[in-house]
Amino acid sequence: MPILSRFRNFRIPLFSFEEITDIYEKYLDMSVNEYLSITKTRDIIKCIFITDNETRPNCEELITKTFINYNYPPFVDFIKTFNPKNLEEIRNLSYKCCQYNITISKIIHDFIKLVDEDGNHYFNIKYPKIAKKNYKSCKDKLKMEIIEIGKNADYMLSQTNKCKEPIYIENLLCQLLI
Image (cartoon, rainbow, N blue to C red; front, side, top):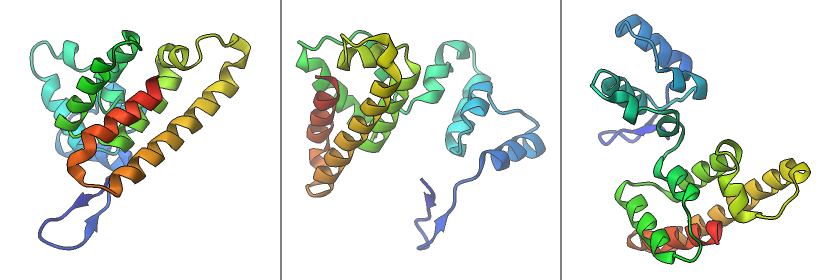
């Protein structure tokens, strides 16, 4: 998302990954984190945050591939330990998403990444009894379902008051997980 100026009514475009790399090399005499260079992020604020935390002790515990790849890294652990019989966990997760300003679109991005990258934990929740030879076509179908569910949830949220966001995020998570 481009940076919006609060003083003027114009948008500043996001930096490209190459521009961010140039800034780091020319002005900061540093290199971009290896995980960031794999994902080729355009979020300079996230790059600065990660670079700042790399200099602190115990940074290996915080700066992991999961932390860098996902908008809300606790999704990965949540999916691995998910119990479909406990809806209270979904409600708590939806409130945490709102507290950390994780929007519906960011949740959708994370779930699409979960389909591809997370060792089939999410895929096995949605399709527990599918043959391995059908994984590729089912993964593509699942991604389209995720996008459709997210599109509908985001549209419904846009038609109501923003204070109801936790309810719509909870609804989205229930549709994605149950």
